[in-house]
Length: 208
Image 1 (cartoon, one colour):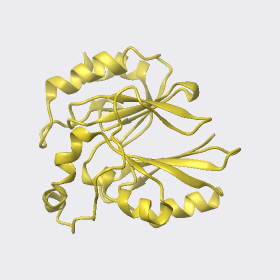
Image 2: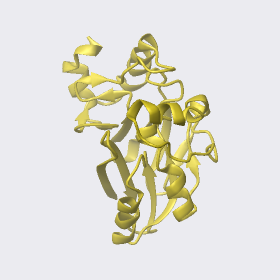
Image 3: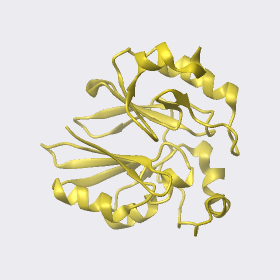
Image 4: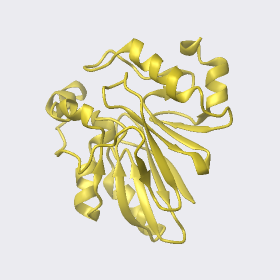
């Protein structure tokens, strides 16, 4: 398994590239910006991009998805509950004082329970609303990996003060769908350092 996580854009969103050395296929999660960098990493590994998954429709996670699709032909998956946020890209860009990126509706909705990813590295979509109505996490059970988007961070949880946020809902999502997962499950959040489910269950002040 090829696994690279690197920050992109002004808000340093964690973009993750997952590749299969045998099939030379790849998926990219949360290509918020810096598309030339993502394309260069794909090329360096000799990978063909097969899928783009966006954990939620905030500008720092979805901003580069359409450009990456145009460069590679890979389809975009995003939970349909976040389509209203996708239509607010000009407003979101205004929050940051930048030009809005061009976006388009996803090719398919990333629904709870759906299996996405690569044949050798499948992931189950976990719908975890709260940060946004369509927030998802990706559970790579075989690889002991959770890509948590902005639902769960090391020592924190996703903010809920933006449109569509719901503080009770995000806690319910975390308690119902993430905390039952194994303690040693590696968690790559949408921003910041890697953690584990066990560490967050034990010490995350928002989950006590």
